[in-house]
Image (cartoon, rainbow over all chains, first blue to last red):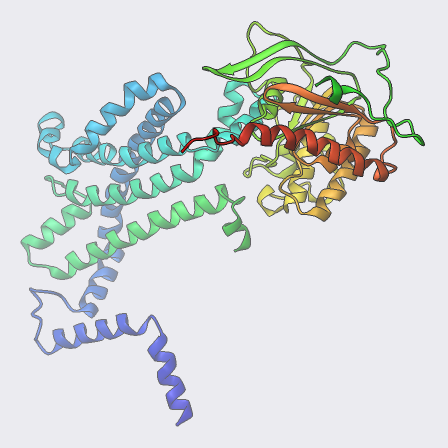
Length: 260
Length: 265
């Protein structure tokens, strides 16, 4: 009896239990016909389709296309955000010039610009990359800007008393001090980039995860749709892991990370 | 004020050295120095000389202008059009150590220094303050006393002619503070910079300084020169403390307490 109760207690506190139970119920409902295949494919069918698409190369090749869109969009967006934040953060004149425009930009939901971007850039890769770039620019800008302004003035003054030039101050004190904020902004930017990717890929795509989903919808292939949803989720997790890895390296001086 | 400037004499000892005429020009020279923010005069026509190798303590209540004076001497505030001469080789130790948390201890020590062998120079300076083994530590892992010792090493590695200490031990516990007093004196004897230490601790000033200035209302309200060697000042401390506290506190009450006007019913 004690073994049984111990087992049930272990199972009861396990965080794996409820997801596995959820999958089991889902599978059972599919097998018994409670959930028809055209509404939602069974987990086993999804797993089979995932293996099949991976082996045939269909999934990897389309994943690469989507990945490139995010990468290019982020590269442009994050770089622009950093440059603008440096301009606004390091000089009052820069702030007066840049910040109002960025605040105006903030009020426009990026996705609402989709029609305009299609008119400007057509329906190829350009509007997709442009949307991701446009959306991912702001979190980096906002966080880095406030990070620069939030650097401890006493540290700046202390460093200045040792004869550091303006450029040395920026390099040794202000930028490292603003780095934690930049990384927070980067994390937001990555998740927004993936969100915008999902929508942008619905624009007449001929390759990529969005294309796979659109095709699957037309053929009622719910298994493929679920596979693509899984891939989006993995992309998001990977992006978060990437920033965490950068943080662990770049912010090694922080006590929380030192103790770990 | 004249009464305060007369030197106290005790029969057994000659406690105060006479003003010896200095052979070298002073490292710090202020004449008629005034600093005001708006209508608020912080420092009022102040004259100050600090000679090479002299250890000066600056006492004063909050708002007496001592921090403003130190900031001017440290080059943190400009003093345009004023008769102020300070050496370009100077270093400040602040009350909070102000180490950059994202640089290892030795990089903090040589911050802004040019030239070769930086790590070696940092190591020498850290050994002097007894922290040679923490050369690669991150600043946030240091205790308060250790951080302050790194700040001292960072100041001394520059071989300053003027060392400015802004209440450097105020945040430390009593025992650590006593150890730091000994360390500062050792470093001062080894390197011989002129020192200006801002403090509100009268005992600390008596224990460390050659000369004590009391700043009040932006002017030097009193100064005491102590000739007794450090370590033999126990007897003097008692007398001088009450005198200095009298100067500090006496003006405080006369400024702060406004008696009620008579017959104000």
